[in-house]
Image (cartoon, rainbow, N blue to C red; front, side, top):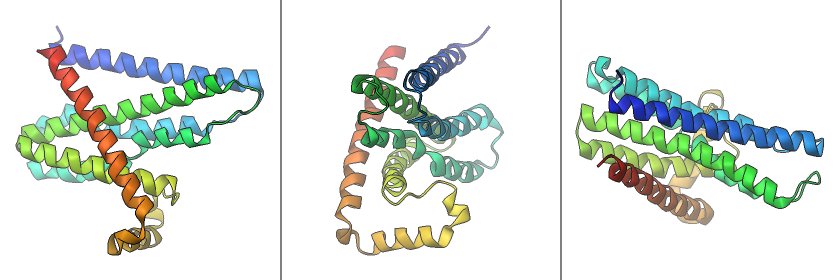
Length: 221
């Protein structure tokens, strides 16, 4: 018989499958009705958003075999590399406009469905990482990594949306990527949009995270 944690995880997987199915169905309907493939990139963005969830699920299920405990940090670093892809889909709302004869309300609902699904993948994966680090080390480490990941993830969203960097560019184009980051860190006041977006996006993600985290705590109480 499954324990309560396993049942909740199974229910969560069903919800995520449902969200993903709805998002893809709306997009396929749009393809059919409009006769165009506008917004096809949402599927790629959603796939990237699911990667941090896949990594955190693997960490969660193999936690007891991670020895020494410090080996978890390279895995967390890999997770953090893909984490910005989850909230990134929110910025696809920038592309919202009347296209292909589809009503704007439909496109808004469709993009928001993709964005919420991606954000959910990211928030759940962040909860997983915080839970594992809290158990392996202590709650302080868990919170430090969680909040730090939100800030770095928000900065990563900026790098992806405005500077057009991807997660894998750290391997394929490390020097140009490092140069862009270096210039921002060296003189942050010269990059007000970077600072503004990172701070406001971090605040938004943190409040969403705390809301869902403590709603979940109340549900389990």
